[in-house]
Image 1: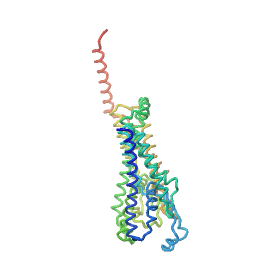
Image 2 (image 1 turned 60 degrees about the vertical axis):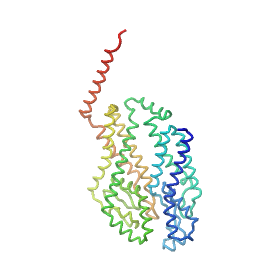
Image 3 (image 1 turned 180 degrees about the vertical axis):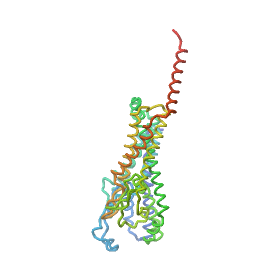
Image 4 (image 1 turned 90 degrees about the vertical axis):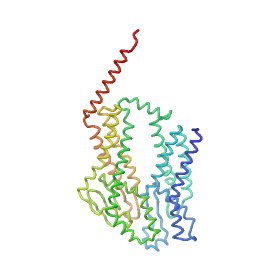
Length: 426
């Protein structure tokens, strides 16, 4: 495919990703605007609000400044007129990231991943800058640099991951191949980078699946509390639909909270609160329906949940070990220890980033501290994954593995003997 076509298609992908994300926010907000405020509503505030929420969905923190008429109408104290919200609905961020992954991979398949990724990154950055400069609200205020850079960084990260992953496995005839050749020169240590990333991916996917299952179980067990909070909110059908949509957008954030609970540190729903397997301490929490899923009490027996990240690490260790045995590489104890440690470190790093995105402020006062504690969350996952990986990767080699290795050596020796016999004599 011609390089110019790759560049244009990558830019088009970026425009589509941004447009779909903006439409996801703008469409329901327009419906709400029409039904709630009528045709005579202040339409000039619709775009700034939509743009600010799109930025917020990509991890941009917002400062909320409530007007005086809203404060008096709702009976809110003056000290709560301004507060920060920094726990975003991560579904929008994940959509942009996945779309960028696919775009980066397509550029790599076409053989021009560097120019394609650069084109997509520039296009999305320009759209992000346009939204940041035009969608300026007096109620939802975002730092200008963050409004431009953070959404663009999400898309660039997806582009690079998708492109480099394909180029590493299939080759690109350029910089990735040169790095690949350099790594191949490490001999027995050559599998380390690829296996570390593969194992960490297994850990993250498995842990996310277990956390999603935990959210599902809590929905079944505490669905009545969620319904009661919906009823207490006294919203009409439109309000209930908007709340439900907001809950769906926050589902990835809830999964991260659930993963932190499974790992042990848990999460907070306000300053001085804690929700973990070791114990739950809750004060007065907001009447947001989805918070009805938060368990009211805990038991020390729930600490068995820390076996879940250990099992995720063991699964990754088993899959990596099977691949190493199949390829006949990475037989040294040091190599396998390095792979186990690398998987734990990368898993902890991804966990720390997820915890950073899923924690922060959701309101004034004590609600400024919400979500998992980043350091304990990452440390717990890293240690638990390391234990699981080490169990599988550092265990003594099974007799079947040794027998297979001896068979391979015998076949190589026999092939060598046949070559020596059939070689012509001068």
